[in-house]
Length: 512
Image 1 (spheres, one colour):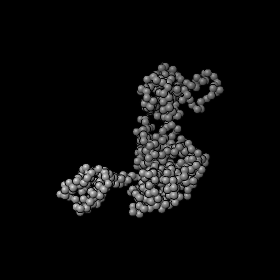
Image 2: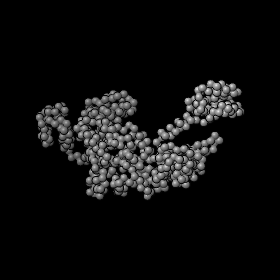
Image 3: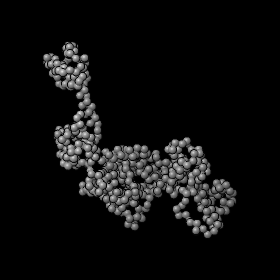
Image 4: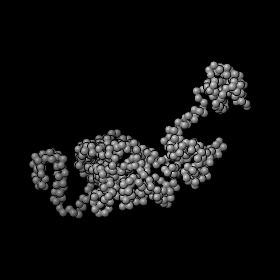
C-alpha cells in the first residue's frame, strides 16, 4: 500500500514516522519526503493492519492527517516523464554538467545505434566523435546556437537547453536532435498548410478535364514528371496537386525556382553545404532541399534556367539518388521525387547546347502540358468570379459581381499572362472600386491586353488600312466564339448581310 502523511513541519518528525514503520516490521520499498508531506510504500501492509497504523501515526505530534494513495508523486512524475520522452519522435538526451548522458528517449537510443544501458553514461565526446563540440558545449554552459552533429554516421541539428540548480550553477542540459527530414516535414507543413489537391485546379473546360484525368494517373506513378506550359498557367498548382495525389502526400513538398537564384546560391539551396564551405556559412553547415525533402517531392520550377554545372549535379542525383553537399566529400542519399516545370522548349535548348539531352531524358519520363487560358475560354468567367470572391474576402469588402460589359471584356481579352494575369486584373479592379458591380472600365484591360509585339504608331500608313486591319483582327477573333455570320451579327448588333460582306472581304469562311 501507498500512504500519504500530512504534517506540520518540525525537526525529527520524519524519523518518528519511519520509526513507527520499523517497529511494525513493515518493509518500506520507497519513501518520498516533500514537506509538509511524507509518502511511503509498504507492499506488505494490508487492509487489516491499516486502521491501527493510521491511529498510531496520528498520535505523532504535528501529524495532521493520514490517507491512502494510488501512486507516489515521484513515481507518477517518472511515469509521465517516460511517456513524454517516448512520445517524442526526435531523439532527446539529458546530460549532466560534465556532458555525460543521464537520460535518453527511445528515439535517441535508436539514433545512437547502441542499447540504452550502453548509451547511459556515455560522454558527448564519445557519442558525437567531436571533442571540440563537446568542449564548447561545456565551456559555454550549453549555450550554443543550433549546430550540426554526426551521430552513428547520420547528421542532426543539435538544439540545447541548459539546466540550472537553484543556486544558478549549470547542472546539465537537455539536447534535442533534429534529423533533416524531420525539419523538412515541419517546414513543409507550415509552408503548404493550405495547398490543395486536384480540387484546387479550377475550370470545367474539356482541356482542363482532360488535364486532371491525366494528372491523377501520373500522380500515382513514382517517376519524374515534367510540366510544360506558358507563364501563369498554374504549373506549381498542378505540382502541388500531383504531390497530394501521390503516395508521398504525407511527406514534405518543397519548391525551388531555378531562375530566382544565382548558381552558387542555388547549389547550396538544393544540395546544402558542409561546415566552413564558404565565407558566411553557418558553423555546423546546413542541409539542402534534397535532405529536407527526403521521402517527399521536390518541385524545380523554370528548370530550363538551371546552369550547366547544376544540371550535371542534378543528373547524378537522378541516376542513383546520391549527392554531396557543397564543400563536402561525404556521399549522402535521399529518396525524392522530382517534378520539374518550364515554359521554354527544352528540345530547342538541347539543339543549341544550353540544356543536357541526358538530363531531359531523365526529367521527361512523365509529361503534362498545361493549356493557356486562350484555349479554354469557357473557364474565363467562372475563374474571374472566383477571383472576385477571393479578393473581396481578402480585403474585407462586400461581395461584388461582374457586369455584362465586364464579362464580355474579360471573355474577349487574349490573356497573354494566362490565369495569373486574370487574377491580377480582377484583384486590382476589386481593390480600386467600391461599387457592388464591377464594370468593364474598372478592369484596366487596355494596358493588360497590350500585345508585346504590337505595331508601333510609326508603322501606320493610312487611316483606311488601320481600320481595316483592326476590323479583320476583331472579326477573326470573335468568329471563334460566334462561328456563323448570324451569331456574329447578333453579337455586334448589326445586320447579317453587313457581317457576311465583311467576312468575304477578309477571307474569313462563314456559315449562315
